[in-house]
Image 1 (cartoon, rainbow, N blue to C red):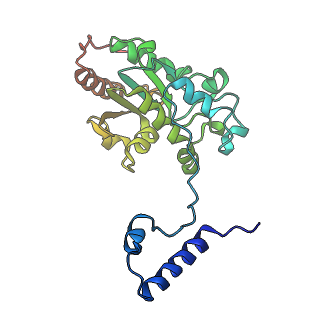
Image 2 (tube, rainbow, N blue to C red):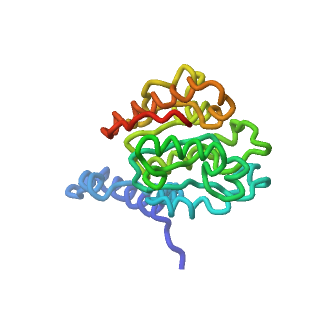
Image 3 (tube, rainbow, N blue to C red):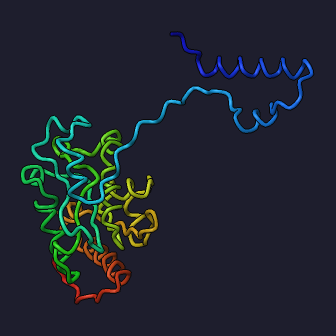
Length: 248
């Protein structure tokens, strides 16, 4: 049995009713039909595929990232370095990328630069478990080279999601790449540090990377510059400023 397509059926009925009306027959509610029944058949528009819901926890985000193969760094890494610390930390430190020690252990800032960062955090009167520490890149670039633009573009959305989940009160951007990525700026760190900037309503304090302090041990002024930046962070968090420590 042949069945009329809905569009053909509607056209046939409409044509029949119009013919009756033109022949002088009154009383057919053609106008009403057009207003109430009368929406021509339209093909259904293809729907956009449903996007997976954004993870609501750091564990969920880590599971979503999985054994990431989204860029070439996956071929040379030992471990993906996601981040570590308190999921509701008031303060987040963002670095550049994992180094050799971090790649080996799968944890951020555990090498020499990490020891400097730990001492700085403790000088602020805090402990590492109270803050959150992560990097722009989750995998180590070979030979600790600078991150490439495509690697940053691929990996930085995960950093954004981490920060959106944690919702810190203050972010400390450690070094050039963290600062330029978060603030979408090309300004050097020497010009950006020492004052707060804004990332989606969250104050960001750029400061020198701990590895920079290690490379310039003889210049103590750099450490005092970093300490001055951290004093501003403590004031923003309404935390007491401990007595200054003279060793990084």
